[in-house]
Image (cartoon, rainbow, N blue to C red; front, side, top):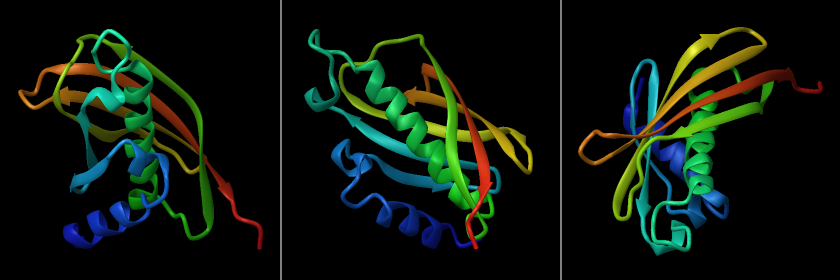
Length: 139
């Protein structure tokens, strides 16, 4: 696995997308995980000045979807999200939030991802579960 090449490809696919709008970047990858980072600025705040839950879910789905492209056969299959659920357990006003996606289940058709969002000190901000499906591409 060429870590730098994978991260470069993930970040290149973010051009002109929601990921670019939210300043999401992919910062680490391993044999079974992908990590993305999003700065917590007023751009992703809710009106009372804390990180918006929707921005957290967008970060989680972004890293989970990108992990599909890293760890699944996207040459022959298109991957789509089926369901996402998030439990926000701590608020955050500034700094960076990091999302790490790892498989809970890696099936041929469906996949379940565990995505943990943490602050720079490693404190849990949100626990997310994402379910994806692999659909054969039309020939």
